[in-house]
View: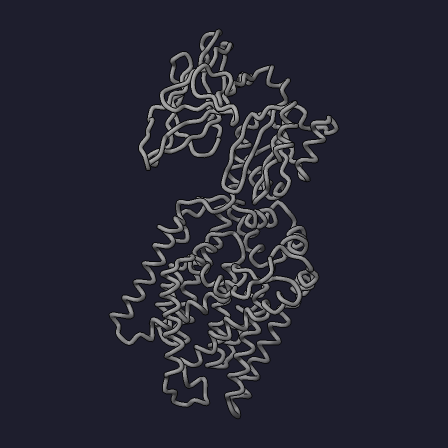
Length: 592
């Protein structure tokens, strides 16, 4: 599940931070400088990615494979922790829940540090529990190693450490005599090792502590409920079942007949309850208070460190069901509901949910044979990974796009006079209508395409188009329904034809800007003809998009383009299938 469709989606903004910062062509000092100034996370994940890139290549697959591997190992890790808290059965149930957990799955396929935080939170608690139950050297070393790995993976590891210290003090207080002294000794030694091991992180922590403004919004008082919903894919039915299982766990803890009520280590159920409770609430309490008093710092993915505790509590609720048949029916129900959420509701493996930097950059690169400059106001730096990978030689420009366009239109800019791209992603708004009208006086919008959370537009100077480009707009068709307000011509049924255009004997690139309304669940299918010679066919979508293809014009002379919709459909309640053409462009291939 974690390797399937690993590169189905583009890397999004945060992942491109990883790709650019851990680029093996940069020096190690540049990586650490980025982490201090621009991406305030501990360095472990980025160091791991940097080494992997050096060994296996600077690719999406390598980047996400590190996370997929960590996510897979976390299944084994939570089995071991469940087994340590209670028994093998709890471990198996918890491992199965992690297998199908949407949150773990998502971050197992994202090139960011959050799945490391999930994994090392589990392993640190595994050896923490071992150290409580059996204070000895190997458990001390294991705990110190994994809590340090957590601290070097995400800053929320500090809050996990506080939760462990709190519950550790409670367990030590419960003991008497030599056993208490033994626990104090081993926990003190582990504290010394962790403090010494964490000293290199002090500069990073100081940088983070100086942040006085952040993109995270004010924390809602109902954040735990919101986060819980997100951890499990937003499925209302699944959430209801899980809350019921958590209640089973809590009720059984209160009803249990404990052997030695004063000794926690003698009561596994009570010990597990207190450990999981402190893991969740103490870990989020500190960032919640700081969010209220200093600066908002609570965000769902940062709290992934508490998700293992919630999954273990749910698993314990299932394990405490006395009837084995009912127990496995309930577990199966949770698994089925989780898979339905992942595959059917979220369409995780087929839908697009990440900004399409890759697709947007590929479109620009494929259509940018003249290497027109690319203006990208917000995400120019992030786009560099895909531009570099595609071999683009185009100049990239960042800054206020409308100010840059003004400088091009006024002739002050030393670039973009022949043409330029404007691109945006991650919520960046397109140019204003007012600015588009200003551009229209000197430039023609030659190419445009919209992607998920991204877009690109190509403007060519009008004097350039006169040389080797012919543009047909809505007024150049002799039939079809002209919709002047929208500057499009509609095909209600049948076909439309253009005015004759004079073509040379040469190779041309033909680009059609079109969209459609679907009927009966299907979009219009268009056939493209020149002088009754079929050149291409395609389905349009609901977005106005370019479709391009090349053809050889064998004889110089006039040509008429015909666009035919061959699947007209209308039925009340099921829609009316229509196509809309905005522009047709003939571009002479001058490379031959």
